[in-house]
Length: 429
Ligand code: GLU
Image 1 (tube, rainbow, N blue to C red):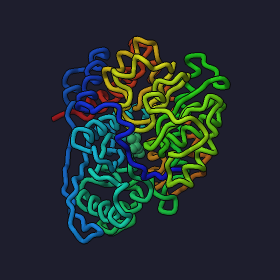
Image 2 (cartoon, rainbow, N blue to C red):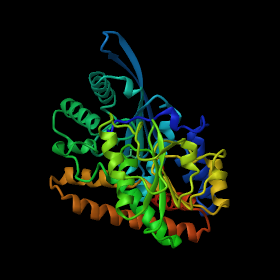
Image 3 (cartoon, rainbow, N blue to C red):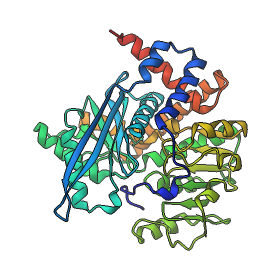
Image 4 (cartoon, helix red, strand yellow):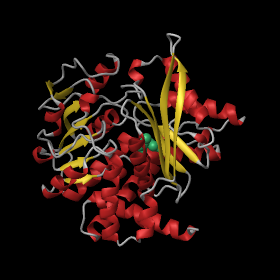
């Protein structure tokens, strides 16, 4: 298995993107109009509640000080404490974190979790940093944001470029400062420190459930279905393994180093073993023909799972996509312009805010276990998470049908209905 700390790569970026937050607002406006959402509520949701930027001076291994930019944006706490991951990548900036925080608000509402949405990040290239440098950076970030985080305030988790190791550093720093062990302040921790069984595979597992649900709706037989999965990190690798375990033939896989195609089906176990023995990357894998990322995205498969980074399905490649179903494992893989093209082509897109909600769902279960002090088996966690994904899928499907719109807009409508109620009950003063 590749490491959780595998960051994004420029190779996987199809285009330089415009404002990601504008793309969120564009979809929010379409859904608000269809739903007849009050303009007051829409206006509240167009503005993140709190945005913090911090400067983090770190002593690098060469003895020199380097100052990193850190961010945390709380988009909404209308439904509960804010929840969302922390990413380490070079393209982290205020706009990206803002967009990702808003998606968390919608994602949590769709999954019916008692959470609002937040996101954080540090502009850095974790691949070029030593473990010691990453530890100091994570501890400095936590120290700088200790007043923002809290078990019932704002609960971080892993995202691109971070994993259980960073969450353990965050937990220990936070606990040391507040003077008590506070496992519920962060999710995605190692199991020995209060992490949940099933959390690591949770996002990929949710992608698998969402794919099966979409297949049922479109009458696709999973025994004869084929798929291409972009990304082999924490989401993609588990999605590949779990889709394969359901009988779906995986014809293409990729990571930031290479993409591969095998007409007869990729030997998933061999690919996983190869990556494990090859510093976590697929480059050099001999179980398929090497193809480009563009070829993977437009390959002749039934299901396409973009599970790497944002903005990989754009106006440039959307007209050439051959898949019948797209299940968005990554956050924001499809541009707002590409949405229109995919809809016109009749491709069913299971949007990110629904499809990758399995991760935050098990984060919630982790938080519940931390609060109660009672820990569940992996089976129990998976059963609860699968049920929750199924219910979320149905409510988005229902709203999409009801409002005669795409699942993406249907998912926003699902979230907006709940957010509107919560904000109205609480009142605005
Ligand atoms: N970073 C993940 C996401 O985008 C997980 C968030 C969480 O578990 O809080 O959904």
